Image: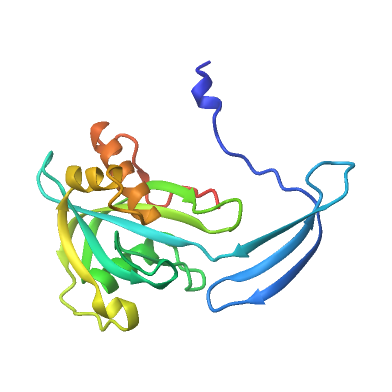
Length: 209
């Protein structure tokens, strides 16, 4: 058996003796658990943010080998910087399917729709301190929605640019792009293209979250 097939994350919850919500926020809660990490030992205190999760979209256009990806420059106050990002948004609509959320975000942030959707990469943003799961989709066969979405706050100043996929990956590796959705999504898209897209999964594939 190929050992690589045995490498997969698995659920392994530990007993939680107590949980306290220290702060309730607009998007996330700050929690503290007393959790028994090692059986027979005293519980330990762990603090983390509880997050609803989010989706990102690598929107791709252009002929094979010359693909361009959509990047958006947006102000992010916690890091006091304008970051180049792929379209993304929270899973903050109850019972909304992740791919539907991704379609909504692509329309709201870029006035675009897509006929082809695939699951590209899944990850946790900071598993040592947050529950936040991210799924990045690949969106192809793009077209305008025909409707200009009314944006506000930070989104009102969004700047859009179509960048060659190879150029965008070079920007990641040069340390010029820092948003985690962009880093993971662009590298995953580049790797998937190198494998002739064989690694893509259906948009509704199970999600470890």
